[in-house]
Image (cartoon, rainbow, N blue to C red; front, side, top):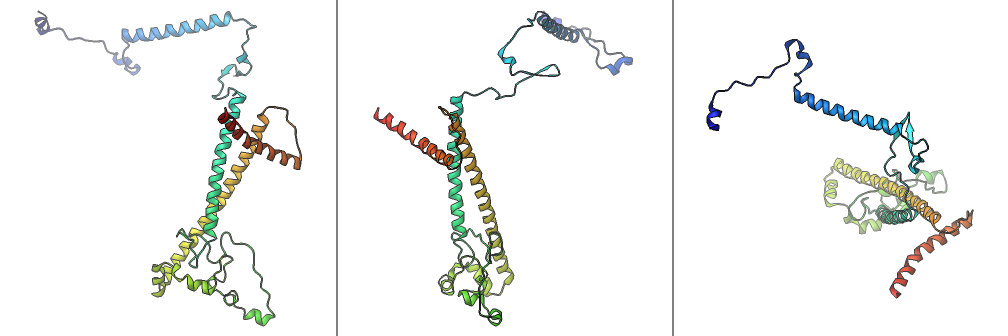
Length: 291
């Protein structure tokens, strides 16, 4: 029966549209649209009425401890930022200890890298590359990291005019301008294989431009190494300063009365406090083992 009813021709459903003169107002509102709008309006009115009743019945002497830190701007309550709640002193000391341990690890890592860089920059062979092929360092001693002068006294103007730096230092003319690692002629003969084979072949073939490019690359790598060394030294100094500041804060947060020391007494007291802080964990560990 239901199938027959569905087969019967029905009148098509027609819905009133927005009149032509009012089409700029959008679609014509239907009853379901009015229902949603009315429910939303009534809900807002109920909330406003509840707030008005709460304000009318408020106790003028009402007080909460949260009001001490609360702030208002032009009558509007400002929410407290995240993380503004105070941390317990014990938790703060634990956080400071973690920060100190992290800075100690970072400082040790930076110190090792600085020592490795300095060792590489001071172990230049005759080709101007450090051991290991990293390649960093000024070949002529006139770039980054070069400072100071070397004054040599001779007998007179004639000797000064005929002065030969390479002969005086007993080295090759290319290395006479160096301020460091100025190898002697016999050392150069013993290290003749330190120049890459490809570069030596280019030099024998007379390709001066290719050799100059190789030397420029070596100098560029050395300047980069000196710049990295300078950055790491500065970073290590900042880490050390932060570690000292955190250690001072930890000492101030400890138990007992604090005394302000000046001069050498302050340095001695700080060293003694650091030594005591380092020994204390070992004592606790030993007591735990004995127990």
